[in-house]
Length: 636
Image (cartoon, rainbow, N blue to C red; front, top):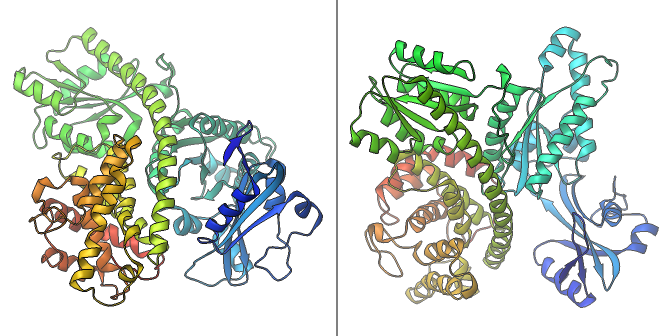
């Protein structure tokens, strides 16, 4: 199979033999796969093959044939919901469309009208918050994610009445929908807040798209209120390596940065301006943290002409303001010696929570001890200023640091885009492969989703709890991605053992144990990719996720920190999911009992620090996993 043609979508070209092989593989995963030629699509009524002679409301096959692209949609049919995906391709040079249809499992059976009401906002017709909660929030989706807040919406409501507010909201949604694809998701996330998800969009295209939308909203005519002009503040991020929920949180922070300017767009892919902003509204925000009111006043006088100033008189207050304002803060001037939480402790906490990636800190103190200064730099301080203050030195160091971080963010944006594209391909191929393993093992792949979610939650708590393991956000994402391959070696295990409903014999269990070595061998033999961090991490997880902290695991009997940390985390995640999920040989165990079994050592020994992390996040884990649809049993 080869890609040809120019434009945003590459045209897939295949021979008849290739397309038949492709469809045969797809039919093992999806109930309905069909190929439609140009004549069939243009001349015959489009009847969905799962319906009783009822035509589709809008034929994505014809749309895809025209656009030479790809589209998806949901269809509500009686008591069921189906997802239809169509992709344009050329078979032996002739235009065709391949359609894949699959039913979506839901907790409730609903008819078409009820389905529309269930997941669509009654006022605007966009998806509603429930659709986001049920279908989008937990997905690992390579997409551009944007939070859109309508400026002055409350003013419209208060001044002109709720009808004006409704019309403004309807107009904004209609304007956005005119700018996006059928495969994109527009959600009414709150009263005047919208969520936009644009799957598989490049960083530059994402930023341009958001700016186009922002301009269209500002220029839209509001029916019946022609004198009103809308504006929107938009924050956007690329969701590589994180759930949609996490991407929304990051986009929300950037949206609040955009609101400081009003009617603007801020993304993690922006190229920031070299020059300092001039208007008071656009001045960078500096947080001065010092228990001395006099010191705060002196620093404020030095900087207030060109910067907004925020003050905190303790380390605890500093962290509270960080939680509220996030990356709206451009720089922190932090005193070292303070009652309660001192400056070094604040710096350490900021490091654990990844604040230092985006917010530089300059330490201030009359304490000139080289040990103290060295420790501050080790914890991530960008610079150090001693008292008494020299106004010119303070101003120049603050200015230089803010400029330096602006350049770093531009470089990070470029790296993020490269990471995004690579992550998208990695996740796609890994998910395909893991689905094959799970399908052979009698599952739909939910176990893999569980392990990824558990791994991500545990790693997030680890970096909050201790600085013993230096794990960046990208490293945590890589481990969660690689965890999907932990059981890849089971592809070589006999079906009769994999799906045996009863207890395995000693001989069968010895065979089952070999899946760790088989999976590791498969990855080791990928000579071309053996030095890739993803492959190396997946190798560690495959081989050692059944090792135990006391050395009583397999295959190598490693103990304690001899076990790679990635394998330790996935090991605990795998055991928890095995206990709380139904298997071919047992019923699911309640969450509380599973936790107690792990604590009592009934499932082997684990890193005590990881056990503490599990206890800390157990409510979050239970909430996340309980909302996922249950699947057929498998053997862990």
